[in-house]
Length: 86
Image 1 (cartoon, helix red, strand yellow):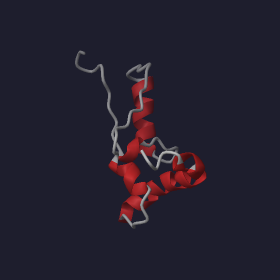
Image 2: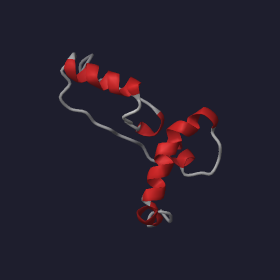
Image 3: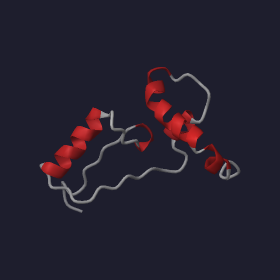
Image 4: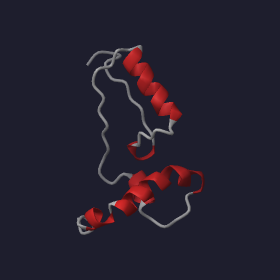
């Protein structure tokens, strides 16, 4: 891989939220200016952001970010319950 072939954005729990103007601006720049044609969203096993969103704990400023994941987890609780034992 040559320099400039990989453009990376990192944030808590790899979320791409419509309200995250920073990520949206970076993606727009990558596509429109750098002509990026492929975008990969990749997470990792044991993600701390995901774990934090599933706990009932106040994480301060991170709470507004985690609230989106918490809402999704609540909406998909039946599906997620199948994976609790993993």
